[in-house]
Picture 1: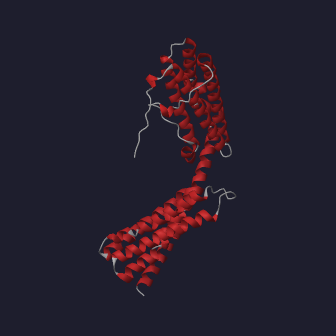
Picture 2: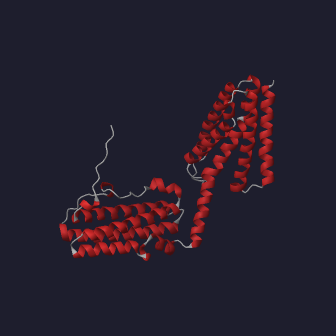
Picture 3: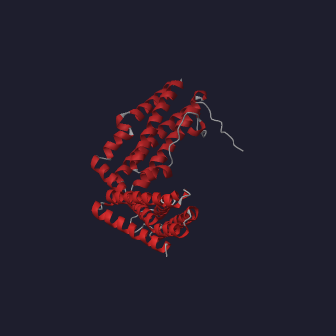
Length: 324
């Protein structure tokens, strides 16, 4: 049974609740920035330093808000979170942003500060107490001010040469964790499934039987390659990253590589299906060659020769076995 959480409207909040909400929001933002910094410190130290500076900013804002709250309403601060109020967008948690790299985190930080600025501007308008109104206005200016924004801190702590290093590192990590295992899987799925597929086509002269053989070979190869990649290297020494990311990438691409030239056998006429499958294989081999050239810096001539020659040999093996 589904239930929908009741969210309060910002316009209905009291001054006490606004201050309590601001305290919680600053604490959450500070912890988010600290999480970002902690997870970036090894690979992206300049960006980590930027986020630590931003976390310090949020902690100072929180301290000022608590002092003002205690002066106005005493020691007890009710727990009020942004998700309790309609109109707020919750910051993306670390596990969602981390795989996207430091650029995504910096963009998330800018969005968080823009939201904080709008919140303080709206809060100041609802507050009758002069000192509280001044504090909220000052915080709005602090969030909007050039020297306090994520963009300004980025310029201070992440110069252009550091950004270039980060992009190069992120590219290398992407190649090691996703492209290399994915390419290996695509090659294996596209090439290794050719022999059983075409052997079945020529032996049975039945599209549906060939389709089942191709699907079984593709899925089986994907599972095998995925586990083989994930268990081959934990990434600690080699620096190849998460074994499960590599395993998933390899397994999925292996399956895709095999399914591509299997799908034509859904066509009842086995001869038409085989002709179309050969065309699909040609496209797959060209895609593999392009990926190797783009991400692995392989020369076009050598890459095409290796890929095409391997594919042709496996294709011929399938035909010979199927006609035996």
